[in-house]
Image (cartoon, rainbow over all chains, first blue to last red; front, side, top):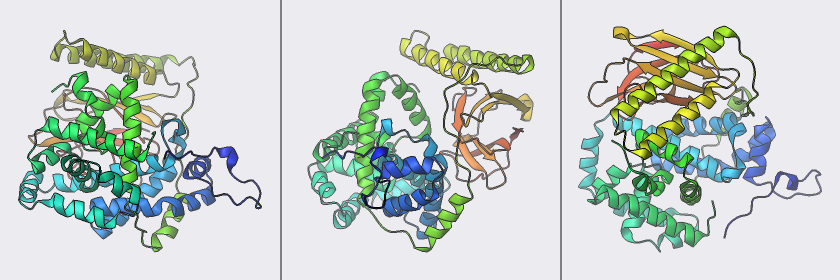
Length: 200
Length: 241
């Protein structure tokens, strides 16, 4: 079901209304330099931010570095968040994913990435990926909806999202033409979107 | 290599999971600006992808909390974007902007010359890009700086503090070595901050955001895909102050 984000007006002004502000509410306050709101936002999103970075980057020390960069960027650029273009959670996780992928790609660029991919090609990594995801996903809905995808749709989406692979790399791993991978990713996400009832 | 509009449209999924290379991402984002249905689909698919992120929740080490909060307390936030207010510019400034506008125009003409001029889609894109830069160049606080690089190459930066953006143009930069790209950096008191890769098509203009606080911009040669920190000494440095 699509989540309705509460508007700023719904933030409790008095202590006798203990409703939890959403990430959108908090980010709007952070944009105005509210450090207490940033602290609450940190508690709200740091688990998914770190979890996603750890999943993509793997290395603990590097993950911690990227995590701190991302959280600081959330603080620094909160003024540029446009609630008309999506929720705060999406904005933060999109930023997170971008930074995590930047990190692994620049590391890979330094270490002959083609050899790297060729080596991975022989180890069928997507089985491992799917298994890990199935075993560790905390949200039942995500797991259930992933089950609605075809194998190639799911592998295309997950290899890109959790491993940070570009679509040509995913194509190479799965032995598929580039165009096929592009459409698998799109079709897979559309199916997920419909299953989860995401409205953007 | 240019992609047609239909090809670009199928990239919504790959874009949402961040599976595009930098150059393709930039081309796609340009396309997004004038494709309402793509933008809507990208918003939905990006929100969908972020659910995959939420699903792998894992708490960071507790000691990072105080560190991040302290760093935030000591970091100035970006100013919000503002509606642009028209203003009469000083002659010198306006002259500089005219140079920048001409540079952009020259680049656009070059780009047209390189591509198939019959490709109306490409033309539409270029004209849209040109109007985007015109808009940027008319921001009241823009400032123009330039510097020379090796072998007669020049770099020009147009900076707007209020928009926290920079337009970078290069002329006569030599082709980067095979498997290498030019990367732009913001230099301030801390570590160099990556500002983006220069377009593969020689002198095409590029926009970079996050310029606030930077004292200089620099160009280095980096491996394909760019680096998180510079791996080579800068071949060109432009002072912004």
